[in-house]
Length: 247
Image (cartoon, rainbow, N blue to C red; front, side):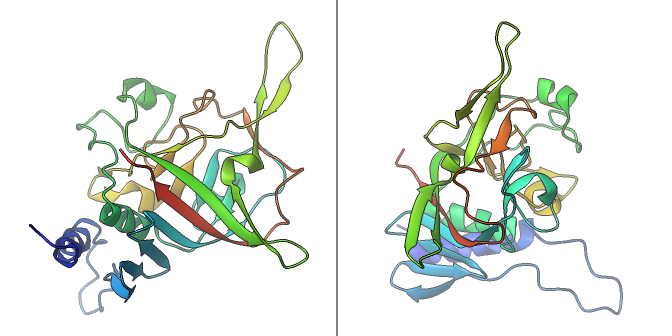
């Protein structure tokens, strides 16, 4: 039976090839495209900014609060992604987060067949796409309040959903507590879409993101807003933690 370090070696070899960027121009040095996992404690590994705790079944990395009010389409993106509509931003590369999740045993969704999802995700391509599948995960944020006391919360508690009905006035309700879906993104035209688009986690269905929102209303890009009554101030540092739920 393969031991865990052997699995890491095989996954790293896979990731280094799969996530390789476009080759550098002739006579220019190639940029580093992937960091190898480094064991920093028994069962604990680091991949750049990302930490994997095998025994706890978690992947953690730094992020910060990006929005304290307004309409959301994403939960978390990189600064180069669609940050104007995301609750959090993080410098952690999606490809390294995905590598960490693979180390925990996450499967994500199957690679879409050619033509099932176009390079640009829109209502037409989503209509053709298969239903998203993946692994159930919980997501928490750890941060310090004004008094310097450490706090932990499920990230969905910083989000509200606006329900619009023809029969009555619109109603704002808290996002439901519950798992998220680790879909794991996919490759298109030799590009890992989550990395290219800077998309860690989407509130509105986006197969290119690593994580998707399985809640009612996830196909509507006008329903999700910041819970401005509970979210910490903008730029508050947080530790974003993904826990892979048992099968």
